[in-house]
Length: 294
Ligand code: NAP
Image (cartoon, rainbow, N blue to C red; front, top):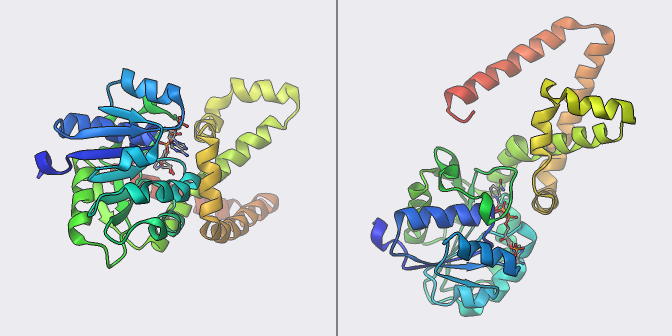
């Protein structure tokens, strides 16, 4: 299947995720023509310098024209306008996919804009780093990570199979699930942890100057890991919290109840509660290591 998977792929938004996918296609589907689209001239110049595409353009419709597969890989808030831009240019039978970190909102923005003779296969490669832009990408980023596809039951199975095959080339483990379920799971595994990191690092920057310099010096005590997460792209994460607000707010409610319980245990000197809690959480870390997701 590999050689004939796609003749022409348009990657609209060629930053960390889009450029990593372009590298996979370059590596494993060398016959496939890649058209890259971004807004800024310097992004497109970087793409050409890195040899990641056969053509570059700042016009999403021109990129989509004649493509067998269009991959939307911009921040979530651009999906709706971009879907409307590419729709008239899509050839009959074209497959459109996305890589957005929130699926219900991505589907609500993209699906209504597309013509009925195009196939939409929403996706989320659950892999990444805190870096952005085409220079930051690398093909191996996806290896052994999960890719979640959230097609509707009516989606053409052949289109789903092709998108699955692409992510499998990237050595991802591909699963399908309903979009709503995806958004709840990712609220726990990704969105809440990012919000906590943004909070902690923000709190530290409000401390007095004497403490602030020590926070940097002694950051290896745990703070450093939060700073890495809190260095993630502000536009992308703004969009994620706005797009997945229901699931995140529901989870935050439970989180703050649990936080209050721990606060009470500390105030009462209730070591048993703390010990029992931390023992339980340690087991979760072990199960992540066993699942090779550490
Ligand atoms: P990124 O590195 O910041 O790249 C975004 C790209 O989109 C850039 O090439 C940017 O081009 C382009 N872009 C932005 N707005 C555009 C517009 N209106 N029209 C055309 N191009 C536009 O972002 P990323 O980390 O790859 O994230 C992209 C998507 O992947 C997001 O939807 C995110 O939810 C999802 N995702 C991210 C991760 C992660 O860890 N980063 C993981 C999984 C999924 P310019 O340089 O010209 O602005």
